[in-house]
Image (tube, rainbow, N blue to C red; front, top):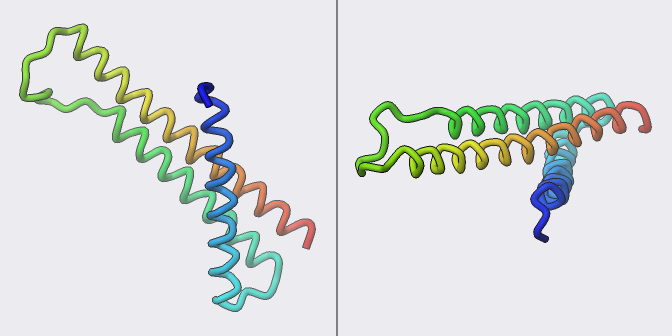
Length: 113
């Protein structure tokens, strides 16, 4: 898969499905009986995933004050900063899409069951 957008979509969908299964198992073990309880569980799982995405983006987005211990020319430093920002945006997209799919699971659990 050369297309990074397709790779992020597929991996986020699979991760969301796996995390949804984990939420359902936790709900069954906790004795959840109503669809509202499962809907709330999926909602909070989605909120946590989106929060993880924002935190990871902020972590990659910040620049260190001292810089690396080696001396780099401005072009190399700019390339490293761009690569870090790209990684942060990829993680934000991955966790954000997974969280939105969890919100979709929450909507479906609340409406269909």
